[in-house]
Length: 301
Image (cartoon, rainbow, N blue to C red; front, side, top):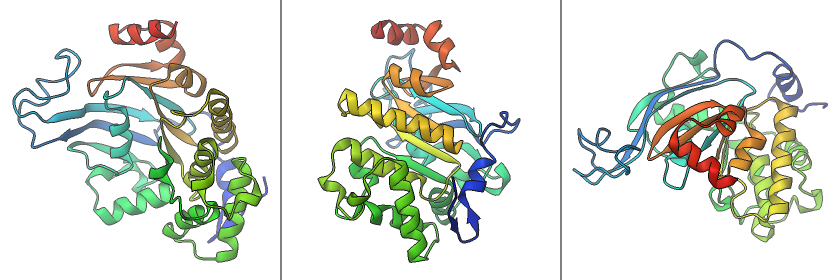
C-alpha cells in the first residue's frame, strides 16, 4: 500500500506499525462503569433494574436504565463484540462512547487522547468533537444516520476529512477515491448520491467515511441488519479484510451471533443494560455460563 500524505501524516506508515504486533500491555480504550439513564432518574434506578429484576425500567421513577456499570478494555488491533437482544443497551453503549448520547456516569480513556490519562466522557464538548472527528469512526445500522444522502459518495468522505482539519482539495479527492476503491464502491459512482445506492453499497460508503480520518478505533453498530444474506456476507468479508489490512481496533455491536463469531476475538453479552458475561468469543459461544447466554446460543442451534 503506497499511502497518501495528508498534512504530514503518512497513512501507510501509520497502519504498518499496527500490523502483526503483539497485543500491548496498555489498552487502547478503557471503559469503567459507563451508565446511561433516560429520564429524571432516582437513587433506586440501578438497584431496581437489570437482569435479575427482568426489566431496565425503574419501578420508582419510570426512567429507563439503558446501560449501567459497563466496564471493559479494548486493545489496539482487537475486534470486540457486544451482543444481546433488542433493548439490551448495546447500541447505547457505543453511542455514548461516540458522544451521540451523554453518559449519566462512568469513565472512558482513549490512549490516543492525552495518552489515555484523561476521562473523555468528562471532557468539554469541543474536546469531544475533536476526539470524534480525529480519533474515531462510526458505522451505523441505518445509513441515514451516517451519511448525507443528498451529498455525493465522495462528498461524504470529504465532509469527514474537512471536519478533521484537512483542506487540500486534491488530496481530499485522492483520499476519497482510495477509500471507495478499498471498500469496493465503483469509481464511476463516486460523484453519485448515496440515496440511489443499494443498502449494501450505502454501508460500504459509510465504512469508507468512517475510515477517512485514519482513526485507531471504529464502532460498528448492527451494520448488516436489514441486508440480504449475500450482501451481508460481502460486507462482513470487507470488514474482516480492512481489519487485517489496517490493524484497527473495532467494537462490533450485533444481535447476530454468527456475525460475532465471524468477526470478534472477545465478546460482552448484555441483558437489560448490564454485562452478564464476558470472555473470548469462542469460549462464550462454545461454553456459555450465564443462563441468558445459554439461551442465546441455544436459539442459534
